[in-house]
Length: 289
Ligand SMILES: [Zn+2]
Image (cartoon, rainbow, N blue to C red; front, side, top):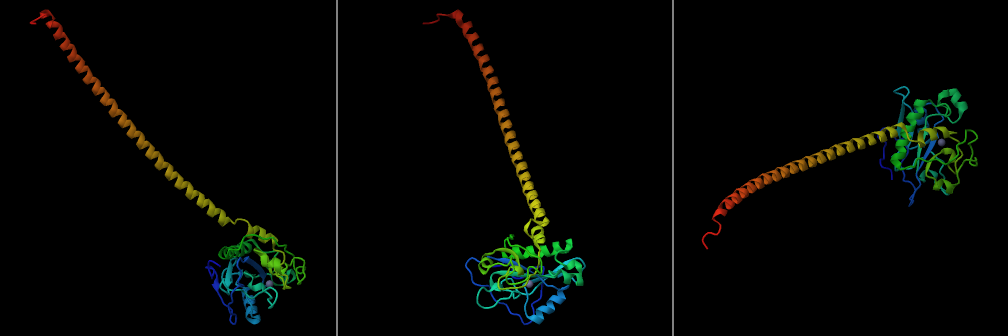
């Protein structure tokens, strides 16, 4: 089950008329991140399509209308509810319910449409800031839902990717078993070919370690090093104290020995004196018997 139901950074925007429903009940579900493209130029266009056609993903990501060159996320369902962006006929597999977290990315798999609406929104032209911003949200989603950062499907350009029998589409069994990142073009019982070929984006932005991760790891290592340093200093101090203690003990012992030697000298001297006296008495040897 997802760790959070609503992404902290996303604006909650449930679509009127749509209701939540649980995922399929499976013992060992394979969690997936399924990517769509909205085939429109803005979030507003996508949202009016959701309202009109009565479907929505869990999350839409797109250009932030309030701030240029930034990415924003809107969430339409809690993460423990299935979304409704896949064709999902009763009978066979129910693709929406197969532990699929669906994301609509504002953009175009259809590059001819992109040329009309804004070339940069074509999946082959997304600028750096857009890819990085979208990827940040997708990684948060994967972390929240325990979706593994893996991808073994084949991505095909639109329109070659279109059709229920398109070569890259998975069988129902393969889809059910698949855990990781895939697209609408891989869902069985579906015909749509979005999001086209986003293999480079997936490889470069979703599978590898992101800069944030590397920075976090570096911070972690630095913290551990500092801790070790502190421990080392404490150990050195303890050793030094023990060393000092030993030296003081040794000096005390030495002092004792010296005192004993002095005492011994005294005793020897007295003994010698006594001996001298005894010898002096030698003249009266053979005294009274
Ligand atoms: Zn789609």
